[in-house]
Amino acid sequence: MRAAPAATISPSLIRTWLVAARVPTLSAAIAPVLVGTATAHLSQVFRPISFLLALLAAMLIQLGTNFVNDLYDFRRGADSAERRGPVRGLQSGAITPEQVRQAIVLTFGLALLIGVYLVATHGWPILISARPPFWPASPTPPGPGRWPITAWVICSSSCFSVSSR
Image 1 (cartoon, rainbow, N blue to C red):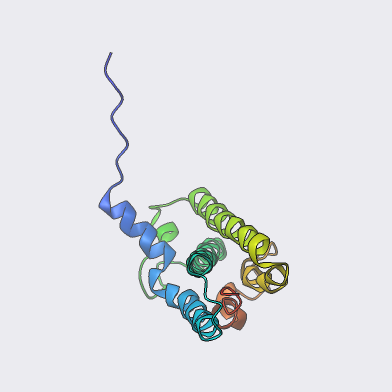
Image 2 (cartoon, helix red, strand yellow):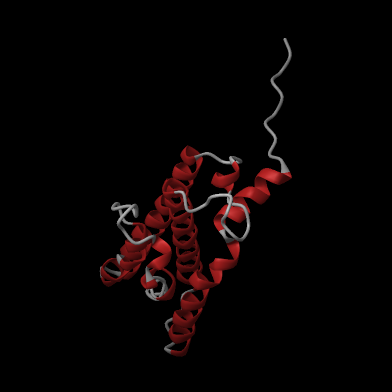
């Protein structure tokens, strides 16, 4: 009996997911955490583990929001052949809507677990301030007659400012 071949991940699939993740946008998640961390350091309350977890959670929220944006842009038809810029994974057919939905659940799920830990270790005020990051990807999806996520100023400008508390 022959063993089944091990699953391999091609470099093109990795590249497709990196494009779908929109890695360059991670600076929108990292910068506010760094500002909060600098403030914590100046106040002599810096906690390295909390910093790393807040940074990871902020990046996961950014990635999840990017995946939500791609999924709903694809559903609305915004990612057509006429679209300028890099080809999106869903647009090219390299990844499926179900795979993107799974990536959304994974990224937001991990961010939620980190958030629960941070609330448990640092108190309930984090719970109150952590709600805004999830608004851009709320259960009410953008669609015809609604504003797309990319039109929401809160998505890129303010939703990560609370992640370093």
